[in-house]
Image (cartoon, rainbow, N blue to C red; front, top):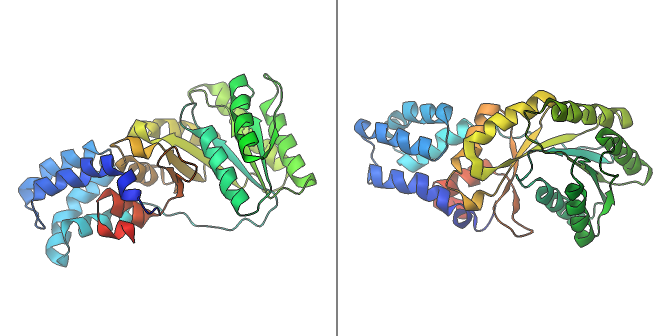
Length: 300
């Protein structure tokens, strides 16, 4: 997944694997240790559901299988997290709507996705359907200039859904490979915002049958499990197809990625692990779990 993923997740692996290492003191597990292990798992933001699975299964799995506690824990985590079914979208343009609260890293994520697609020789159109904040269009304009990517914006206060409609139509008429639509990110307990997102989704489908092909929800990894409540609000408005979890290099809450994927039953598509242009990575469950547990396989 990333040649230095273990290094990027160091704070999270210290909070999880480092503490469990000290608790178990080797490869064996004593039943008496499990109460403290539960605190460590919850402390790393693994969530109640996954923590309960681990507590119930880990001691028996280690005894029966002969695996080390790390190997057994890795297997349990991997078995309980949904993995995306990658379907190749044949449609052109492929329309992606990106949602999430302000400050989660939405605009940066859009720019990095555009950069990746352009590296693959795709023609990309960015559209700012966040007409609530003038700064949103300005931020996207800076990125589009840096990347030499086409950008569609409207005046502040314009109808956000109309921007999305125009973007999809322009994507079709000018033969773009991908259209990526940014949306407003006010806190998702605002009914008006959720209604607006639902309208954007519907209007994309009117502009092009089957669109949008992807709805990505960007979550701030430093917020950890608290982002789950945000996610549930967005899920009421639009069908989320994948999660993007950002800022994971700056937090000890890396376990929350697994918790959110498991509890929301939505696959993680990408993770953000730094400020660099290459720090948006495809999420690979096995590599992530191994890095989180500081296992050698993470480098393979």
